[in-house]
Length: 315
Image 1 (tube, rainbow, N blue to C red):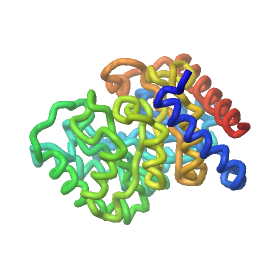
Image 2 (image 1 turned 120 degrees about the vertical axis):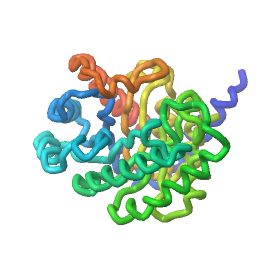
Image 3 (image 1 turned 180 degrees about the horizontal axis):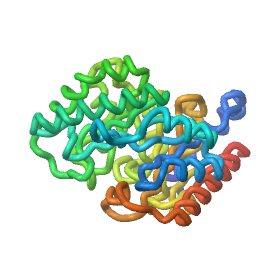
């Protein structure tokens, strides 16, 4: 029986990986950096989140970008103390962009809110040595376009603060999101076009998300290869947006693709964000979580990822 088209693409990536291992084994020396995005943990104390990650061997964290106002959000000194006590370092910040702080809004006051939000987060990011901040070009949870000028307004607005990313030493990571949740910028190619339109050295990177890529990309592995050196963070969840290993995601091919682009280096992170099935996971951001459920989620995901990484490396 002949292979299906996606199988042919998988096989091509596998062959490239085997060739890499054979000819340049030193490029496989380092393991991929495993992080975790904590906004799905809701309103539990950061100390509990950090202890959970440390328990399961996750040594990096993507912090919820929760500085929604001058009196809100994590404080640098306290954050570094909590994370340090648990052997966890900050990988980056998960920027949260809603209709309230929309870079593409047709209301100037909301675009200004996005600018102010980004600047607050960059101050915090610099203080805790975060490497990147996730940026969504249009509001999450608003899949219907305002009009035909969203892309233009968004790129023009982000360009205002592009230099601030550079000054803070923080990578602006543009995240494509599935069409069910945002009105534009759905694929890696879309993110590349957006970065080109911003046209500023302060905005050069991409935050991928495997769950969204299942909807927007023809093949996730090929999309990762296309992202290449721009990719600085990759959100992970299985096909059902649950723990890795609980769905039908071809994790092995993705791991091979990441090694092929040299992703196993400082500043590049694989960051599980299993938010559960359904169309709107965002209410959990402000809810009280079930600690036992989260413990199982982190433990199963971290173990499965490392198991599959070792299996791939053993090919």
